[in-house]
Length: 420
Image 1 (cartoon, rainbow, N blue to C red):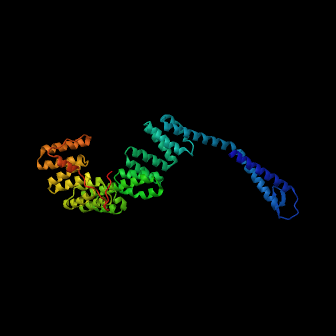
Image 2 (image 1 turned 135 degrees about the vertical axis):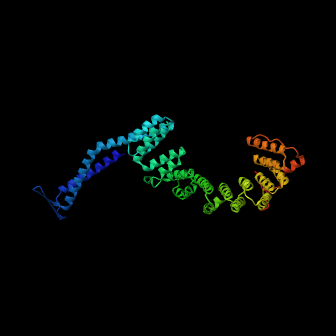
Image 3 (image 1 turned 180 degrees about the horizontal axis):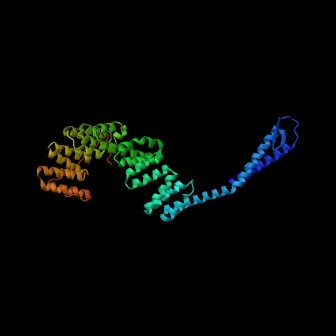
């Protein structure tokens, strides 16, 4: 197409030149102004239109001569670019197929071209890494740094994170020459900060990542939840914890993973009221079995108020294994082992696993029933292995029927819930 276009342009210019020469050869009676040129002892006189056309013809001839003179060099440059692209394609194909040495050789040759040099060097680093040739990978990285500081930073950071070296990755990404970071650079920086337990800083990058669309919507949402949970878990004191929690969007403050992280961190700081309130608010907003289990397992006081909340939830979720185990834990903390035992048997009948058996074992140990305690702890191990439990003695058929019976669940409108 380029040859055809050039030919058309040359023909058009030739036609214009012919018409211009004919026009210049004609005599014009109309006065368009005169131009006088004296050069090297010679005088030349003509009118303005002829002078302008003469200049255009001279410029066209000079342009045509330059094109003809540079044609071999341009043809050679096109040939080299075509060869470089062919080598790049072949190298990438070999890299995809696992022919590491052949791929690296073709990619290194393709890297001689300026246009594809950076891409070829990045792929050559991957080929060298696949061969576990650190010296070759370093050599390609040094060559890549001469071509593109941003590409060098991203490739170095990617390799460092794969080797669990977040400090090296962060150093590469924070290099002034690599700024501003492209979208993938922001993702790698957030990953490095999270590995360094600086998730609060990583969470602060999410705004720029959303703006640049560095991740798909689903992956970005998952990363936001993960970083939010890690940020509150890493809070060094109550003020930092409160600040990070209050700045989170409301949907995240009801997300089970984020709420669990906050409640556990608040409980560790003896911030009991905040821990309990966060769990209760999240459970009221959206029922979640792991959060309900954490509500009973959390090492905080206020057993009476927590049990009252759990009893309220029991009206809507009478078959919840996690809630029944939670009620058992709270009852045992209040010194009401018989009630706790009844809750645990009901929980087991509704599908509870090792946590219920372990709680039974703890309760039997407290009351001195060592045989039942040993059998309960053994059943906890069997539940973890997926093996059937050994039945505890002392439960008659009437009690077993009561354990398995479930009150019909109804929603806030009084309609029966469908159990999935």
